[in-house]
Image 1 (tube, helix red, strand yellow):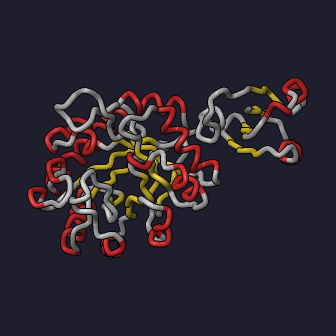
Image 2 (cartoon, helix red, strand yellow; image 1 turned 135 degrees about the vertical axis):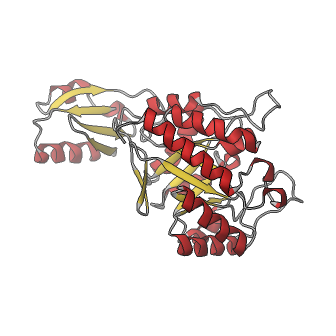
Image 3 (cartoon, helix red, strand yellow; image 1 turned 30 degrees about the vertical axis):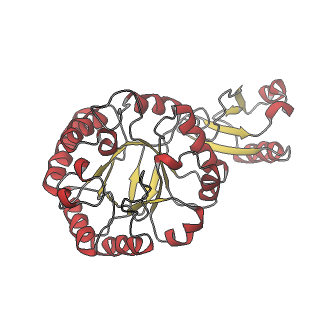
Length: 336
């Protein structure tokens, strides 16, 4: 349920209403915009009398929300959420360029890539320390040592770091990580999502290989229901019958998600296509359709990469993509 308040409603009356609602064992979420204040009510709202609420002189209207996702629902929060990552922002017109290797392989590799992507305009550094691989014989990442190297790269460049978590037991290792990524295979690891809801770190959730948009939003809801509203969604391609690309990039999801939720939506053209030469056109398409950011794999030597070399751009290729994306955004978002 959402309660839309009149502009004339005083702070004291609003506080009284919120206290009364919460006394019914319900939770509230307040969204204040330029023209209206909205109280989102989370919980079993069947006990609330809609007519009684509508009759209050500070209430402009009452609506019931039928969708199972509440906190992530745009009806609860009409304005775009802006997630702060250090000094960087994403959402609400702020565009993030997240770049780096699929996996951290060595100090020289991650420092070299970090410096090159920053020079090209990246706002965050990505890199895998823990790697979920289809085969148990593939490189599984440097784990804790990989996080240490990412933090060293952050000290060298100032770039906030984004890296994937696979197990809630690893959370202490992520104390200094700026954005915790939940990979596609863990999108519905609900126990992990609950633990991430207890933190206040930004959480980037990738859509699962065969998951619907609604299921992605419900995963975000798990984190937000725990008290962490700092959630970023990522479209990274879904599995279809097509085999020409690694996955099928669903750019319509960007538009649909922006309609349904206030959370920022980024696109990963690297995992979606699996082919380096397809990354640029898909990155441009993502920027053109209104994505709030891109997450792109960049490696200083893709041919020798221990993970996902075929889809990784070289630093000079990323620089070309970043410049082209900036040009697209001057057309799509000329006021920013």
